[in-house]
Length: 305
Image 1 (tube, rainbow, N blue to C red):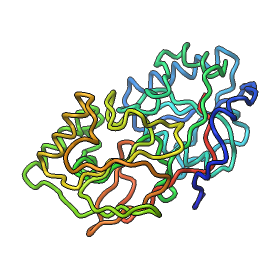
Image 2 (image 1 turned 90 degrees about the horizontal axis):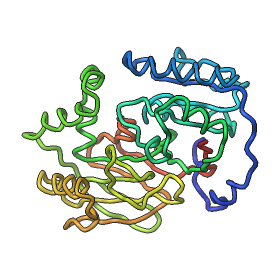
Image 3 (image 1 turned 90 degrees about the vertical axis):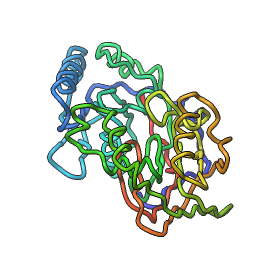
Image 4 (image 1 turned 180 degrees about the vertical axis):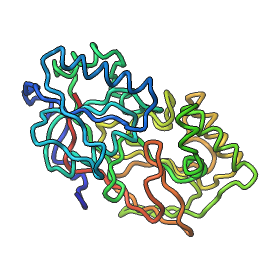
């Protein structure tokens, strides 16, 4: 998987012409730490697949990394973006090219929101089996870790690092807001350097969009897409409290965040991110590593049904 970057030899339009294979065996992955409501939804989803005559294989929750069953013809991830990251890592590691679907059953469901999956089991299963809405998406890689929708380094990544898992389980996405309040007095600011073959830029916060959504229904880069062949990057040269909250306000108002004073916006297919200290990088709502890290698009797109 290392070094698999996008080289521009394939497009979603060309791949969408491929005939849809019949699905009869689905491997279902879910978050083992999800609450009881989420577990009930997974059980209902499983029953719906079985009612359609589909054999449902259990995702292996006990192993790390997860394993893709060789019999599986389709992978269903019933969970949020964090669960999807582990499933994509397992799929990429398996070397297989089979379709994936995301049942929106997590705290934040950015990928499911962008693709348009329904939370109703019957509607969801019919969409997967019919294959009328297939899309081929280029996910990013942070080192060897898949990135489906977004990544960032800055005040928000420090907030993600401070989120208490138990609190997140109880109050959901509001746990991120609680974490932000926790470091308002000691506001984290670190010198970050972004570099690739085209530029070198010094900033104090960086946001990388691979999908349309960044926080729920809001977007930092409305033109970003999972189908896109580039990342959209927004760098804040000054990440003071005022600038950060101005960015949040612009995002909530759906105003162009790239027009904030000191903001730089550009597209790229790879990016090296380094810093004076090992700052946390969050991707799809979880901390996946500490700088320095390299981001790159994956060469082979993944089919979402």
